[in-house]
Image (cartoon, rainbow, N blue to C red; front, side, top):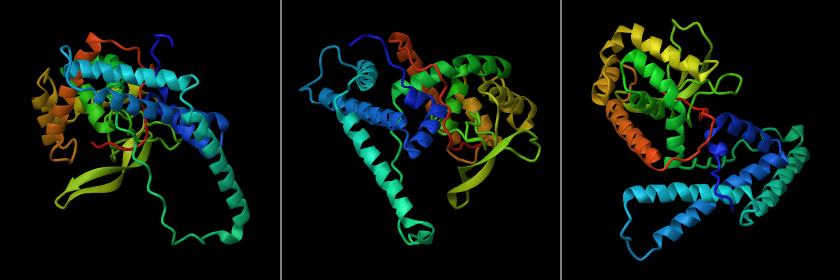
Length: 311
């Protein structure tokens, strides 16, 4: 096994992930193989984590930071294994998924037009919860967004890490970006809504809004951009020109002041938004320190998944 790191493109490139999902539904053999390898990688990671946890006690050099590096290394090992022959699990899954796809196609053909609506009372299977974002994937998000956040931060007088934290909070570290009508990412990292004054492209997505009765999931229009750069530029313009957010400008490294100004200005309806942003900013700083101490060559594509944020 070589020592080169493996870019977790199945996770960090969410435009590719959406295409992969479509290809799986179309029973594409290559897409099925890719999904099986991803599952095997996750399984291998969990297996390595369980093996690490089985040690009898803490070693002299053990610490939270060393555990983080070990976890990141294990993820790379798992990815590397899954890209090769693997442990055999992917092969079994390919066979299973292929048979399942063939059976579904056969069932659809057998049902014919007369079967439409026959399953109206059936309960749809619950969607599987997405895997939790790992520290390595968060570091990838931080590193890739840093150049744009640095540029935007200089214009707003705000720390780049604070802006990265807000993008991470709004999108779940790049996993939940509203999808454009074309099915591609809207490139809206800051969850900016498309109000009456917005004349550009937009898309509709579900998001959580808070009111007197608590949180509720509603459909809202969001701005859509042709690139991440355009989205970041629009975010800077929004904060500079909207009088509600003037208190956030020039906050520098004071995350509390920035978060409080955004929250009081109505950027989000979540009453706990300011605290969440401060906690995410602290996480960004810790991850940046860890990455500086043990740099990894992570994915080159900025995560752009599809779902909703808030503004």
